[in-house]
Length: 369
Ligand code: IMP
Ligand code: MG
Image 1 (cartoon, protein in one colour):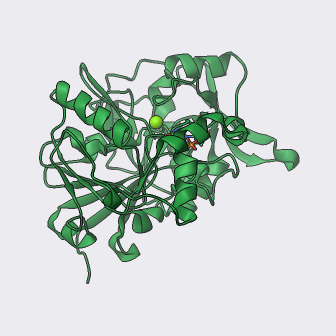
Image 2 (cartoon, rainbow, N blue to C red; image 1 turned 135 degrees about the vertical axis):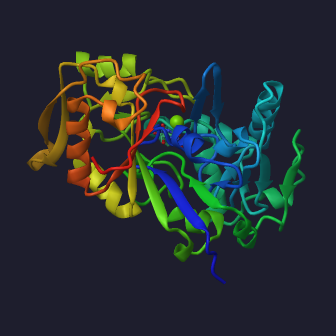
C-alpha cells in the first residue's frame, strides 16, 4: 500500500521550544491532519492569535482548528487527567475545534511515574519536567506498561479511540503534519545523552510513533530559533552568562511553558544545527524569534576548537522593530544577511521566518534568500 498524500514532519532542531506549535498553527488548513508521534505533557506548545493564547501539552496543535483531525499516536505517553484538564480548559474558552483520535497503543503515565520523576536523584540531575515521562517510557520498554487501550478513558470530548485509528485512514487527508515535541538535541539516542528526554524526537520517529512507512514522509520542516535556549541541565557550548544572555531571556520571554523555569540562553550553534539538519533530512527551515535579536552585535558558532570552545562569526544585530513586517522584502539587510548565512551554512532553504509570537507574525519566504 502507498499513501500518496503529503507527509510533512515538523521537527525541532535544537533543545525544544523552537516554535513548532506556532509554525504548525500557520501551516494547518482545512482537511489536514495533525499527528503527535512522541512525548507527552512534558511538551509545551504556545499558540497566539491576537488576544487568544493557548498552551498545549498533550493535545496536537490542530485541535484549535475546525476541520483538522488530530491524532495522539502510539509513540506518545498520555496522562489521562492532564489531557482531560486541557480539553476542559479549551472547551471553556470555546477553543476546542478539531477532532481527536487516540491510539490504543499509546502508553499511560501513572501517578507512580510522576512521583518517581519528581523525587529521583537522576531526574533532579537531568532537570526533567517531572511529568512522569521517563518512568512511563521505561515501563513501556520493560514491557510492563499500561496502554490507552487497556483502560476506559473518561474525557469531556468526543474522542475516537480504538482501531479506527490506523495509518490507512490517513489516506483521506490533504496533508498530514507530524508534530514533533522537544528537539533533536533532546533525542534519547542522538541528543546530549544522558541529558535528554526519554523518546526519539527526530523526524524518523514520526514513522514508528505514528505507524507510517518512511516512504510516506516527503517533507521535513526543521524549526530553529535564531539563537539557542535550553531548559534543564546538560551541555550548551554557546551559553551566555552576560547581559546578552539576559537580553535574549527578557526580550524573548524565555520561560518554560510547561514548568515556568527560566530557559538558559545563548548564541546560535550552526555546528550543532548542521548535525540536526542531517539527522532529520530537513528539506526546509523555519527560523523563529528574529525580532529578539535587537542588540548591537550577534554571533553564531561555526566550528569548535579543541576542548569544545566554539568559534564564532559576528553579525550586526537587528537595528529596528521588525515585528510588524509581513513580507520578506521588508526585512532589513542585517536580517537578510543573517538568514543568508544560516541558509548557506546549512545548505537548506528558509521557507518561513517568524518575527513575533502571534501566528500572523510569520513570513513565508518563497525565494531562498
Ligand atoms: P523530561 O522530558 O521531562 O524527562 O525531561 C528531560 C529533559 O528534556 C529536561 O532537560 C527537560 O527540561 C527537557 N524537556 C522536556 N520537554 C521539553 C520541551 O518540551 N521543551 C524543552 N525542554 C524539554
Ligand atoms: Mg515548548
